[in-house]
Image: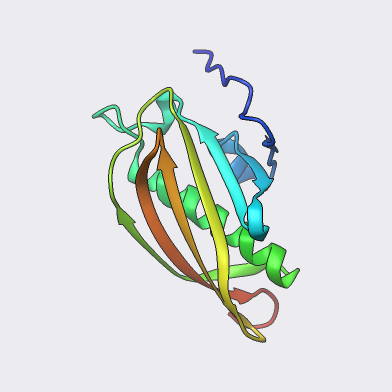
Length: 139
């Protein structure tokens, strides 16, 4: 089965990352207004559950990557997720572009906090936040 992804919205470029993200993508990104980090993916059949909506695990993966990339941009260091919190607000469906914007809300020496909003077709799909620790040493 061939899955075709249309060209990304204006300003978005491919966002290749590790093998897990590549397998679940393709993902796209752009730097948003005010330094926010914007992420997007086009919903393919493989992203959906048996009800035809985006699987919650896919949205959680998208959220984690979105937040982690915003953290990296703020602290210029790779970090690991310590805590991820999310509220599912509505569904996204096959054939829609899903967008997310993330921003860092606080950065200390080792720990960084971030929050994000994910939406599709003008509707909020998920809101979430995360706590990240700079990688290296014991986590």
